[in-house]
Amino acid sequence: MQSRPAARTGPAQAVEAPRRVRLTLARVDPWSVTKLSFLLSVAVGIALVVATAVVWSVLDGMGVFTDVNGLLRDVVGGEVDVNLLDYLGFGKVLSLATVIAVVDVVLLTALSTITAFLYNVSAALVGGLDVTLSDD
Image 1: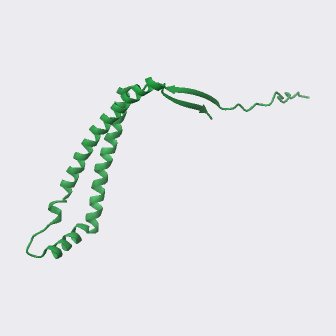
Image 2 (image 1 turned 45 degrees about the vertical axis):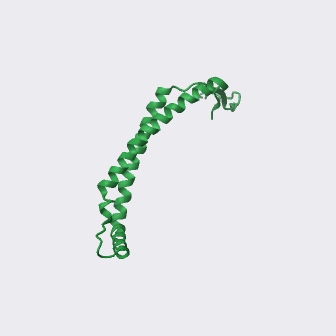
Image 3 (image 1 turned 90 degrees about the vertical axis):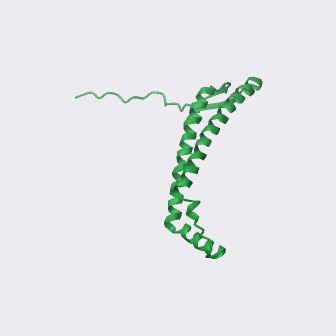
């Protein structure tokens, strides 16, 4: 007859409570904030240009610009030649969106860096931001 190993009977596994750690965010590195905010604002700028191109294409595909041109001709009269696409052409709208995106990149990067410096000054005065982390 073969002997079978005995079943393990040990103490029941105790469920551990999640460990909590209180930390204080005392300083933020302005250079890392500058790099991160630059990358995020470039992503927002690209999204702005792409969204502008998509919205313009959808509006053009639906014939909105043609309908508005007809309305303008009815309101102004036939003697004045008004073409909305002279002012709202795809190239002009995309160029304006690109300029706004570039300004957005510069402003958001600068404002984020200034905010990091201001946070460091205020954290030096009041002690920083208390954060509680836990591992669930």
